[in-house]
Amino acid sequence: MKTPREILLEQHRAATPKLDAIRHECVGQASSLSQNKMSETGKMPVLLLIWRELIFPSRGIWASLAAIWIFIFVANVSQRDRSQMTMAKPSSSPEMVLSFRQQEKMLAELIGSGEPHVAEQPKTFSPRPSSRRQFEIFTT
Image (cartoon, rainbow, N blue to C red; front, side, top):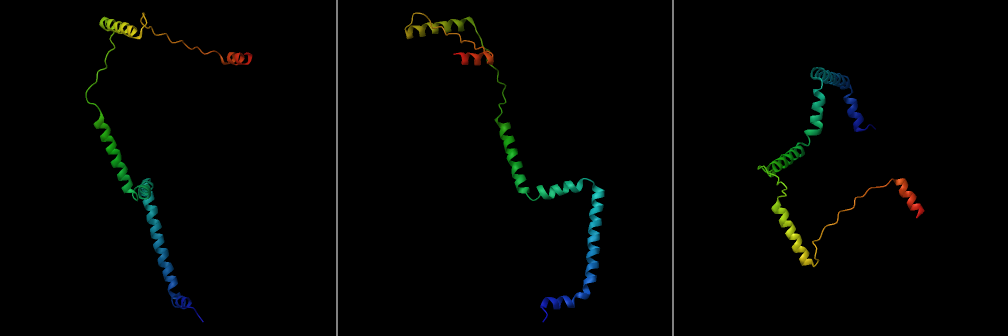
């Protein structure tokens, strides 16, 4: 007993060579067209392939990213201060020095010491060679 598949293949076996000829003709035309496009455009197929594979399918995402960057740029530009800010010059005018000394005297009176408090100068740190440090550690 033959299966339905075998019966159909037997009936259409005569059409197989004609279908193969049509298939070879179509594939040959398509390959010759693609070769002609490659030779005519040079690097264009690579750029077109990148466009089709990377950018075009996710164009919504790319548009969203572009909109976000435009928003960030506009926000950054709008936050800038248009006026030129002038830096305050440190002035050591005699009036300032006098008022500072008066404030020191008042503070000293409030604290209770008779002399104005003079800030100690910070000690300068000069590192010693590491070999000497190791030697001191071992000897002590």
